[in-house]
Image (cartoon, rainbow, N blue to C red; front, side, top):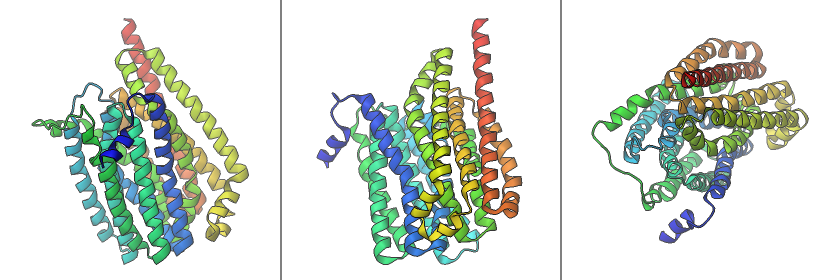
Length: 427
């Protein structure tokens, strides 16, 4: 075990920035890749209806419960360069949010009139994602300690382990629920090995818990928590609408054309994550011009990625998806317009994440909450109507509208706040 720890941590003489970038890319890619691989496998091995159930459980409600357990803390934690809170305090709060997310997941499956297979699959994927959220606390601390590469390694190895176990069991048994049980067990073992066991071997991690600090941390992050829940609701409103208004196999089709958006967000994450600490330090030091230049540079990269994605989707999107999902081929042939709308929505979502992190660094939680609340209200009123009238195309259209609205609101807020700060400092 000590040999494994030394191999994971590596030599201090290695180029830290290079390691951070490379392993962050690998971990992020495999994490995003998992959704595609697993949903494709379930569709092909156990059918379209089971594929739709798993798609909803893994990428929608399970991920929503990940966000609940996540509590919006990670951006706060990795930008807490002054160590206002200890790791022990971050971990203590995250344990409470994880238990809460499991409770909500259990109530949700009892509330809905699901079959046993659907209820069990949804709850097991909630458990899988909650373990992921707990691991995220450790991975955020790796990043705060200047070791982002350990975050990437944990993401990579945990993901590979759980994918391998899930697919092996599914291929042999053809039993979705049994395979989900094994995926949860593999995720728990990966968390222990690559996070819970590894972090104590790093120097400088503060495990103390001071009286009243968890409550203060809770108050500091409550608005971010509600904002994150609203954010994912806005992001997934079209999926919830398809699940509520259409059949399970339609959810599988919608999940298939939604999948390429993860490529844009993945690539954008490669670019954005390594700059977050730098942006935070630049803002705290009053380097407004440098701060703005970095945001514009990152936005330009996202634009380039979006153009490539749209061109790729136009020429290759449906043919490639049809090969990846042979059982959905006929349904996918009618989905090119919906695919292009979703790709554009994914680009706006990447812009939104850039502006969101910028507002977190500026400590503008109230404005973030207001922005999400406004767009979430629109989503609540419109998503089901769009899907009932337009089916999958209606879902794609409302997704694009919601992502564009969020990006516009947050981008405008960042611009106004930077200009306001510049004026105040010139006086």
